[in-house]
Image 1: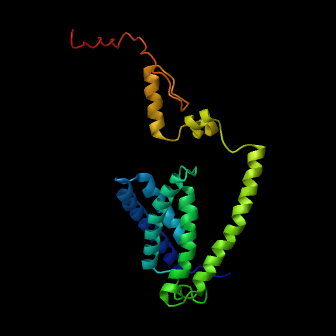
Image 2 (image 1 turned 120 degrees about the horizontal axis):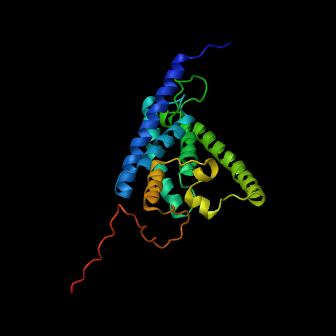
Amino acid sequence: MAEADWGAIGHIAATTNTAAAAGVMSATFTAWILLGKPDLTMALNGGVAGLVAITAPCAFVSLGSSLAIGLVAGVLVVLSVLAFDRIKVDDPVGAISAHLTCGVWGTLAVGLFAQDIFSPGTTGDGLFFGGGSELFVAQLIGVLAVGAFIFPASMVGWSILKGLTGLRVSPEEEMEGLDIGEHGLRAYPDFQVATAAYALMGTPAPVSAAPAPEPAPAAAPHRPTPAPAKGPGD
């Protein structure tokens, strides 16, 4: 039985966490520049983007390279989320941007940043470290080959599911939240606060996107009815 290479494991842990931290930082500042303020969801996706991007090269690159890979991933995930929103792709959590866009970037990054000293006899050196374009081209062919298989296979699979069971829930369940419909619980504290506020007003929380007329305030002995506002001539 081969023994674990603790040095390699430590190196992988360091490059992985470095890329994740870099992704958080670059995504935060990119969103700040493009949206006018820092966005928590973009920052969180930046962390995921850094982790996804470093997955392929984590054992083959230096700490400095992992920093660069994570920084690029954080920028890419923000730009990708905004681009998919612009073309109206239904991806509310940015999963395509974090996993597809940054997964492609990380796979190609092996061909750019790999150094043979970290895992001798495996990848060789990447383009940025004197290894030429051979490794990068191999990674690019891999990305294209996977895409050529996955895209049509996914189209067939999802089309079958759409025909058999459908892919969307009802508009009412979607607006109320799938956590209620699927699990019977609310997952986010702001939903709980909103529900409590409606309960205090004595009205049910809305479950539809259609605007509803504002309900008349319920009479309550401990809540005096406000006096009518006086006009300019009163």
